[in-house]
Length: 544
Image 1 (spheres, rainbow, N blue to C red):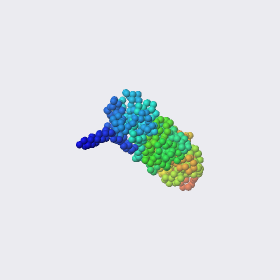
Image 2: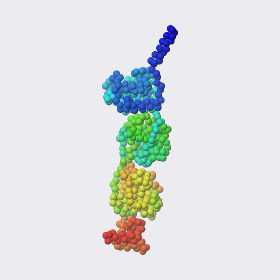
Image 3: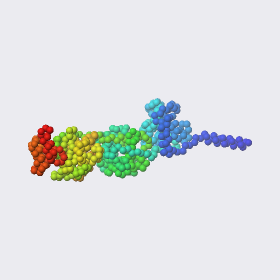
Image 4: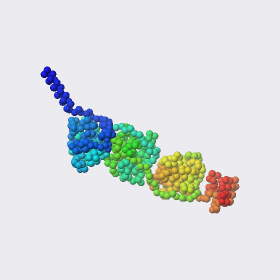
């Protein structure tokens, strides 16, 4: 019997010793830690912005941090110290889930506590509850650098020994956004729109960084060209360098730089994704789509642009706005006369002339070397009532026109029949010592007749937006060849029966007319001079 009682006592002692020792929680993986934090963030008790009314020795912040730790690990250091260690003021091995207490002058007690919910280099992401803010839970609404924390004075860091998660790196599913096929924009931090991403270097490897915003600076303007997979090549307007990543394109802290090329490669192709009320830019080279365009540490002028992983849904350092170009060049609409014939030349080289390359609808306009006898290089300008011009080619009798909408960068300038509508109506603006041709279809007056690439023989013409006041690709010289009055074939300053007689004589082959007289005689602009034109001249002469 004694042996039985002794055995029972031993078993009871063993049982009591077992239940008195807290069971150690296994180490958490990055994905498990993220899952737990996400669940707590969205819960009714611990969620972001929720009211917290528990105290521990008068410290709401301390109670909140420790109870969050208990939710994550099943243990907090003040109610069950087994598995925890006090690291003093040592931040070298700081991890997600650590509870930190430090001196805080704004706190009633002069001290404050928080739990670490993410880390990025030396930046600590803080989740806290503060009595001064009516005990409201704040999830990662504040960051603090390790140096700032050291300067304040750390009281202690409680660290759960078996969990060493220092970064929440997870594969992020992304849905690319289509903002347009070809446009110019500034890239600005959503929370600091007075800043913009800039590239001023002119050689491959030039650094890209954050600078005070200048809406007129081409170094801060980027051309976005959409590719077949939905990503964008992003090319700096001033330097022609593409936004590129030094290194693998899939590792934290890799530098973002300018590189010749601009698109096509994985490190120069960027997906734009909705994020945190703005956008994040994800390189194609990021295998898990979890690396992003990122501002190093603090959002301020001079900070470097790098690559870094995404670890929550509200990181301001990775949240950008894409501000479309709103630059309007200086210049006023010009009246160069009601009817005249002219060549459209590049101001930079007036021997290069806008030329129709075919006589059918859709034929491309290209810049060609001057040929004074070429009708394909001569254009008849007729002013509309709103101040714009319809511009007809003398060889094809087709009008200067734009393929497609007439309001998107890169659309082809061509010839087409008709002579009416916004895509065939062009305003002449003064610009850069010459002129710009702006289609009425450009709703913002930004896009204009634009020579693609360098101004040289064979360069095709498109419409493209203007980004500064000295763009030679959009600066034209309109060289008048003739000026005339419709119907005044004999050029005596009057329209009368003598002009009608000349029209009929030309029609039946009894007289010849100069090029200028032919333009004046084709009153109905059908490309011919005949009895119909003679009739119109007589009707005009008698007031009908």
